[in-house]
Length: 339
Ligand code: ASP
Image (tube, rainbow, N blue to C red; front, side, top):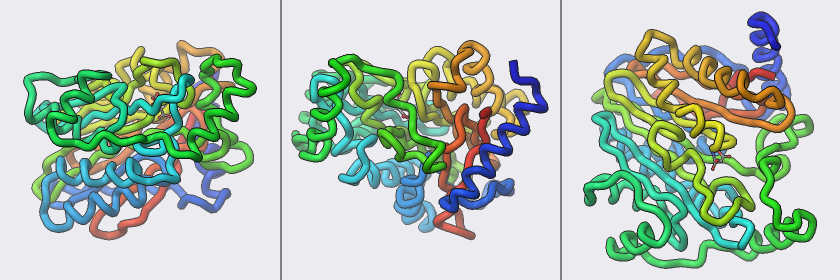
């Protein structure tokens, strides 16, 4: 088992490997913003554009909840992004099924899972939060609700995604594989290697010190029909508590659900850990139970406390996160990692 010193060494190596890849900056600790500075953070490199959209809300003194909804709609609409929203890779039967959740500082939350034909599941999740007595709607029921709310039914499978699915079918023999998650970190140092399969999780604190979070994904590529990941599960893929902070996750959702990942990160912050320490501990809980984690498992957590301090940690190198505040709107940083 990796001892603490090796573990920290490996973490730093992971970070510097990323920095060397030239795609992200060297990791520097982010100062706290205090109650009057707005900041938005999100997972992966596509978080940069998403943050900038969120910033259009935050910079005008807007609400963190509006900011995260606006922000994550950018990758949801991006046809080049095959892991979120429209053009997401389908399940093994060729259906694009989307998962999303949104959460406010006061514990209000809404989510949709296995939603088909609606390009912006995050907007439907917010409607679930604000216009129903429920937290989570799934499948046909979620679609029915979306249509009642005036959302347009669309085909989300693009020719490019369909082509990729047909290619996968040729060799995969219809077996969904956890290895769809494994990326070619070694060569690229960044996600996007093999399957470019990632979630956007976003956390924001606005100028009034209000926190909110959003998370949206097409889930694991070539998953079994009906599979739901961590992203729409409150406490797994996303958790926000205005008294403490927020957390979100990316990677193999099953492991995050098993460990109530984002809730765990927030609870660790409540007990006094920094966002960085909390993300690291949550990742280590998963790794301890998975001896083969070094080979085939990626999970990453991103967190921000109510002072705007940020932390991130992942199993594998390659997880990056975007940071945007009044000082800089296009920050992209490497997360530390176990290996
Ligand atoms: N967490 C997502 C899921 O399991 C996928 C990802 O972030 O790569 O559905």
